[in-house]
Length: 284
DNA sequence: CCTCATTCCTGCGGGC
DNA sequence: TGCCCGCAGGAATGAG
Image (cartoon, rainbow, N blue to C red; front, top):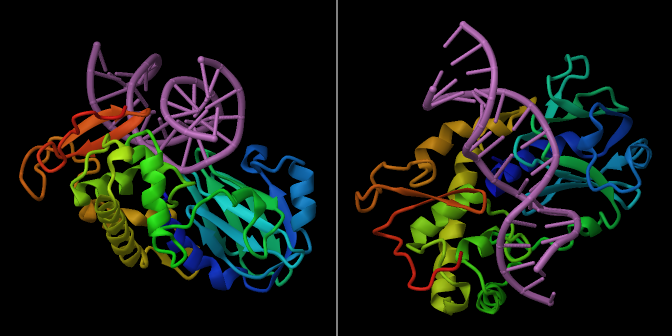
């Protein structure tokens, strides 16, 4: 599941393959992959064709590619999305959704997505930050992230800590896996009421999120090669570095107690009942 | 305004 | 053996 470290790895891998390249043709193989682009597929194609890409940027789990028109191509990988750089004569991938061919006849940029939870769009405001993702907060590794503002925001909320970590308008880039890992590292329960989060505790969880994301980026840097940017290449380091996620009944690496799994928000939370004590007044 | 349930989608794997 | 069903989840959306 692509979260910040995987998306950042993809961004780094794509940067030199999009710089100063002119889009010659856009083929939409699956209409649902053009998402949150209200004027529709034809408009999406028209706004991209003939435009020059000038960079590869990221906000949380969103990628965007500024265009010389002032717009930007915006991409979200969802659950299973990949942005691949492949030779233009390579056969179509099984779940190919959108294909961009370039005027230089160099490799395509292809959006491949098995579950089509992700998608592409063209949005205005691409030179700075596309309008459509203006509500996404800075990520905690960004120098512009406001620690004090985050702590104040937590106290204003009336919800559980994990829900707040997953709220991309509070802090971006954290998904279910890294949320569980960061909470374990910070020794905090997922249902901890946010209104009880003092500044030191907020700083503790931020520190844990930063450590987890940084280590994952460092490990994920090897998951692509020059012509193949593979989001699923994460599996090598993923399994080894996870302490609680997906490890129900296995001993906690810190205290040895069996890791527990809770059904929550239509997904799973993994946590250690010893290291992460359930709060007296948990939020659902 | 704020919080939270619902919905989208497909392949995999467990159970019968 | 083969089928069915649960599960995986980000984020927009609308209900309350």
